[in-house]
Image (cartoon, rainbow, N blue to C red):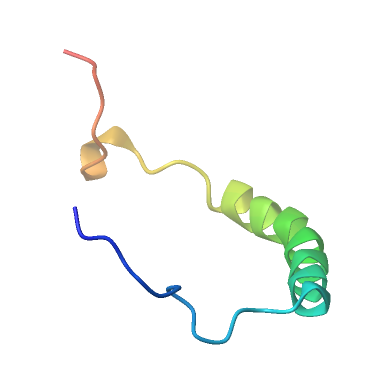
Length: 53
């Protein structure tokens, strides 16, 4: 495993930027969940992997 001597991010985010991103994610999460639920499940005969035999 390679070890890095420098941080992966040369310009890390500020606390204010992180908090702004968290707010956006929290606002979008329910909308994304609703969208994914509206799509529904892909039927098994369309290539979805199942454990059924």
